[in-house]
Each structure stands twice: as C-alpha cells, then as structure tokens.
Length: 122
Image 1 (cartoon, helix red, strand yellow):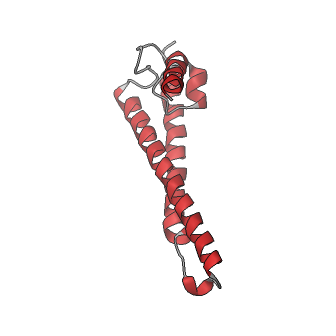
Image 2: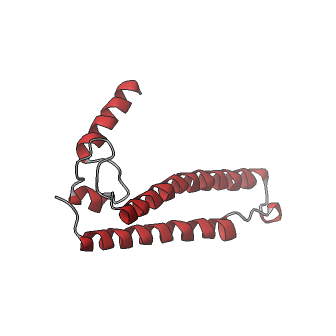
Image 3: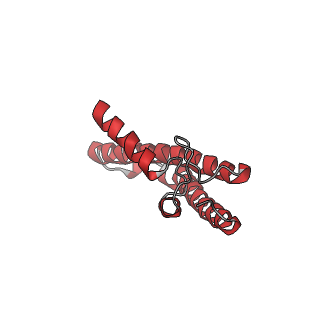
C-alpha cells in the first residue's frame, strides 16, 4: 500500500529527530569525551583504560556516521518520492517495517534474503 502524504511527514520528522540525536552525540564526543589528560591519570593502567574507552567511542561514532548516511539517504528519498519502495524488488515496504526502521532501503523479504546470503558466504 503506497504511503500517504501524512506518512511522509511523520517519517521525515522521525528521521530528522534521529539525525539530530546522532549529531548531538557526535558533538558531545568532540567536546567532552575526547579530553584525555595524562596528568589526571595516576598510573599507566588508568591511562590505557582511558585510551581504550576513547577508541571504543570512536568506533561507535564511526558506526553512527554510517547510520547518519542512511538517514540522509532516506530523507532524500522522501524528497524525491521514492521513500518506502524496496531498492531490490521495487515493491512497497510495509508501514510496520518503516516504523521499525525508517531508514531501511529493503522490504522485509529482500532483507531476509540478503541476510541469508551474507550468512551463507559468512
């Protein structure tokens, strides 16, 4: 079933909210989480632990960067009218799937097929 105009607005709002939250986390990482002063850490173990946490935070932000690209892609699809259409089979993506993952590019059937292939080729 094709999406209605109100659905596009609702998903646009959801995606903008997710985008804003990701950007806020990224900004907080830059301003707060990345301050590592060796003077504040009494020994090498504390310093190593702090560096590990920073590295972990950077990996998380890297994943969020990929997620941000997917959100931007979905917002672009809303603008050009292709939002909610599976990129693989061209069928409509169910509203339930879009509610769960509005940034998705595949219907549930195509996503399951993709995951089966990935699992088979490991």
